[in-house]
Length: 233
Image 1 (tube, one colour):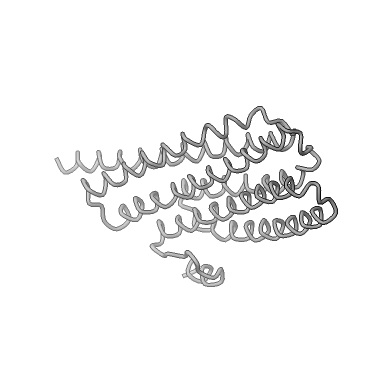
Image 2 (cartoon, rainbow, N blue to C red):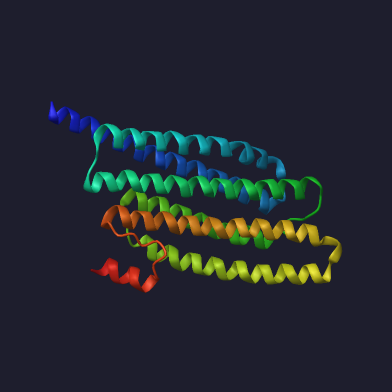
């Protein structure tokens, strides 16, 4: 009987893991749709991104419900409990990435539908948004393979993204000064860029949750040198 219960418990945990990866896959699809729209100045695929956010939201709720059920019925301990808690954190970050993608899609749709912007003017937003694709992929791979080294890679990737974001912000401020008539357009682009920057933060967060899952160390808000020290011990 105990062996049967243990087997069923393992199936429940694996089901949750599978659903997290499915949620991550949907987020990656949303990002690719946004990147395509930005690259070609084509709004046609953005409505699917806007509408698809509800699917990601529903997955977050269902996975969270499953985690709560596991805690209530199985009373997991040690590594199993850390897994359930880490999943609860990971899906929040995935849902928020979905929210940021929806923000980008809404702004881009309005700009493109009203011919307020061109593909050339969206080039830099597309470029920094493209930087987040490998970050999300790396974060999800880290969760799947329990790879703690991803947090170091993603910290560096996020640092580069932040630097590029700040450079683009300065460039947009210059555009506003030179083209006062287009201030509203550049403000919308600035909001899109901010959403991109937040996506990078959430990808790094997921890698931090993996460190908690595998090592039992909470490295949120921890200096990178201290994280390196913790992982080397």
